[in-house]
Amino acid sequence: MVFPTPSGRSFTQDIARDLSGEEELIFICGRYEGIDQRVINLYVDDEISIGDYVISSGEISTLVMVDAIYRLLDGVITRESLEEESFTQPLLEYPHFTRPEDFRGLRVPEILLGGHHANIEAWRLRQRVEKTLKNHPDLLEADGVSEEIRRISDELRGTSEG
Image (cartoon, rainbow, N blue to C red):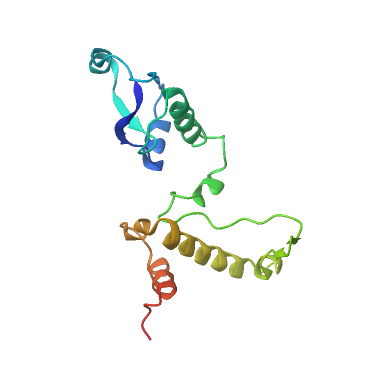
């Protein structure tokens, strides 16, 4: 049984992935002051927080967790799509563009219109590293960051050698 609470461990993509492997999940939601500690002691297996703030009840937190968990189940989203998402690798996701090519004077980057797949992939990787440096640089300190990502990160920081 999962108890959404501000005093729980922080919910992450890794926790969502772990919970997606469970056969069954039950969430117990408190209101205002939570639930009786004896119920927690007897039945709760995990206390999880969706952030460092307080809301009025656990239902919204549960919805956030359920949404993050169910999309990891086989058949909900293709594996290929999941591989490029934020937090799947130690990078955030690259920006996406749709039609029209020009929206209020802002154009889709030319490289995306050229059809050269290798150039598009290189652009996307660079954009991911740049966005991660700006919004969540701690992800780049994780184990398993590739040499290519480190090279791009150093280049963007202006610390590349040569």
